Image (cartoon, rainbow, N blue to C red; front, side):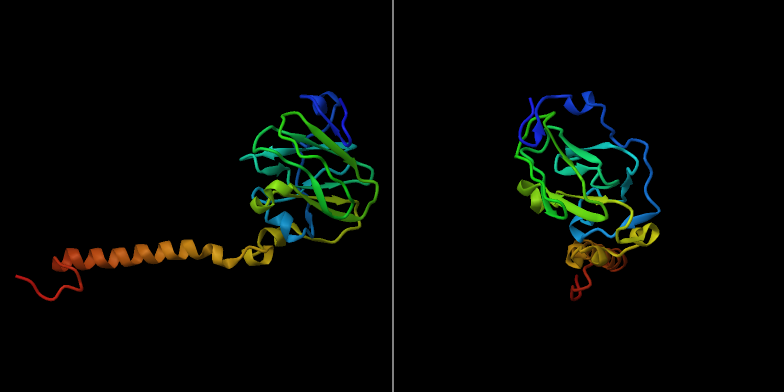
Length: 202
């Protein structure tokens, strides 16, 4: 049964003969994604799906809080079908920039929502609003005339260049310091038989 903008029922997307993008390769150039897309937990590169009339994006992939693939590159006129996995609770798909689209929130496996991207040469991105705090974002580049960066350059970007707060790495730095202090303490204990702060002994 088709809802407003969506199709309910398991296997609906598969029965429509849609393309999942399996076996596709990453583009030599990456669309210049907004940081919301590059901060998605499963983002590493863009799936180049140009040449396909319809493609599928899983909703609730991975740990249930991801879109997969999170970033795709398509042609003008391509239909994107989001298909729910049933994992991670209730999800929706809401555009943040570019073409406007919005699905209802649903948590059932097999529920789908689709949108045809009629306007080319644009970069759109979207979010699952119930899981925005978990960076459940996705991106869609449409057409050939878009802002791009070299794929190798994108892979070498520093975390701060991609919008990752450097303070998130303090945990690792603190762990290394703790290990160093522990090694120094152990050295003194083994060599002198006492803590370096001890003052003499019997």
